Image (cartoon, rainbow, N blue to C red; front, top):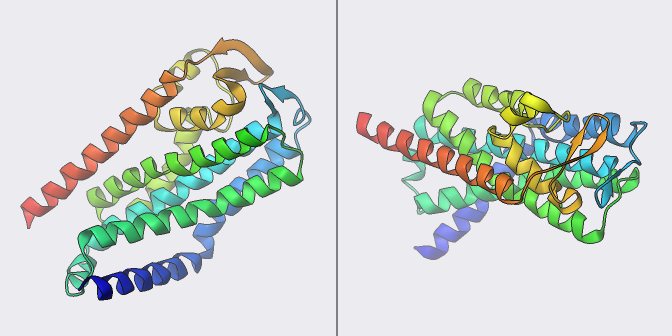
Length: 260
């Protein structure tokens, strides 16, 4: 039983990757749009070479855009996984040797595989267009962007379970634009807006990804400031939102079973 299940999981993962890769519109918003935004606001900006901590503005913007693309990918894949299960695909898979755990593993693999696309593309563009930081900062920030994006697969999963429609999942991915503006991702915030941003889902995630170069130092529209965030703040933000999204998803799964 284990051998056929393993083969099926590999085959299913390949099918899922092909299916997602054929959706060119989604891939544009996942990888193409963040890459264009990086080229406009990062490499082409007049202040792209200005130092920010141990890096420069281009690197700072590069990390932000890679994070945005990665969470768009994981939100979409997580949301569609929930919709598929709720619309009956789970019963079809129940006729195969694949277990629920196997399904989760495949979707997680696909989610991370798609998230690698915008990260790799934008980091490549960054390397070609003047983004500067220590080699360790490139590696650590990339790993944080990839790992942290997993939290937003739970966000997509919760939305998919709540509304059970592809349109709702698309809306969830679209809402990331608003969350990015509110979360200090696209544009440096200050004052009251920055205080509000610290409570939004994307703030801790992106702040952690930038931490290797900023050390928590905040950046305003005019450059680095004297204000800093302690490391525990973005970590706490990310952990709390992960718990919220996971708890909501678990509650929705149980509610769905109760209705059946």
